[in-house]
Image (cartoon, rainbow, N blue to C red; front, side, top):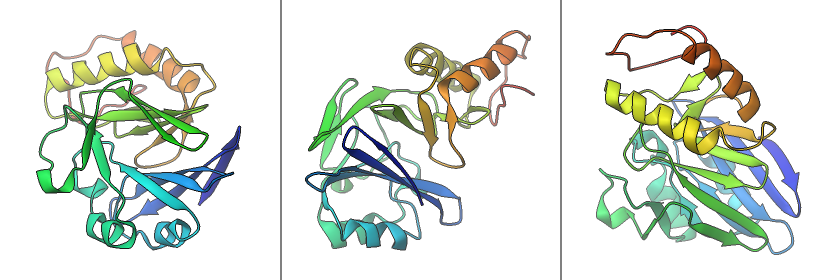
Length: 213
């Protein structure tokens, strides 16, 4: 677990968790103990232990892919906290969703303010979450490139989301992805500039890396 603190807010990163090496994040107001959990991958034992020390008010899930939901039943049974996704997300069973969030919505837990940024491409309702100097990027943006896409149009949409919605953030913003280690907006923007300087086939999609694709 890695812990970051800023202005009375603690962000804890748990991972890699489960067979797909997911990360889960716990955002906590240190004064009140109010907290929000982001994503519910497999093997959540360390997260469940941490949840005993806070008051979990909500769970936000960055997108519909099953590896971000594998501990849904366990978390629900342990906390009863309502679960939210972006309003454009698809393929989520209705009975698992307690609410849907619009782009720009703010989710609060005490002093912690989490702003929703809609970043379609990896999935239609993929969302990133801005918490002060930290960006929880789900599978939208990883160190070195975007999340996997299924079609060339999905990749183009993901790039528009990243360049138009995320690269406007300050260089020092810490990017905390759904899998793997953190990066920064500044570093990612520099890597993308290399990608953008080269021609690419019209059918490019899948696993794309800014420096080598």
